[in-house]
Structures are given as structure tokens and as C-alpha cells.
Amino acid sequence: MTNQPQQQQQQQINIQLGEKEAEGIYANLAMIVHSPTEIIIDFARVMPRSPKSRVLSRIIMTPMHAKMLHQALTDNIKKFEKQFGEIKVHGTPHQITKPIGFENNTETPAQEE
Image (cartoon, rainbow, N blue to C red; front, side, top):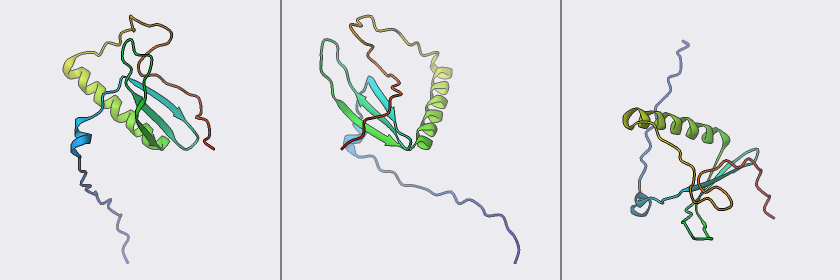
């Protein structure tokens, strides 16, 4: 018997994109919370002069997958800025009580009963 190194087989995945999902959802607010085993990202859309909003989509992933997403976003933002120039992050001129936009919430989510 010979010791041959195992070759990793590259698996192809056929991913389908439905019509509704292809339209996408616009979000300008992301709320992020975590537990020891999950990272939860809630996406919402906040409109000016509207005191209400609701979560449009919730993504739950493992910390490992969240880190991989972070790395992929960082890579894509670098490529975007190389092609189109630096992305400027502006303050919110009509800020009333708290910022509107993507934020990092490091609190652990409450346990559901």
C-alpha cells in the first residue's frame, strides 16, 4: 500500500436564484448581535421622517462563516475602491436622537423562552 496524499476534490454547487430574491432588498440599517455559537444580522430600512421600521431580513450564521463573510466583504470593498475610488462615509445631517445606518451591537441577544 502506498501513501498518496489525499487530493481535495473541488465540489461544484448549483445555486439557483429565484425571481423574488434576484430583486434584492434595500437596507440602510444592520443590527448585529452574537451568542457564543451564532452571529445574527438583522437588516432594516429606515426612512427619513418615519418613526417606525421593521426587520426585512435576518441572517444567522456561525462565527466562522461570519468571519469568512467579513473577509469577503473586505476583499470586495478593496477591489471596488481600486476601480471607483475611496468610499466616503458621511455623517447623518438630520440626526435626531441616535445614528441611522449600519452599526455594531456587541450585546448578547436575550434568550427566547
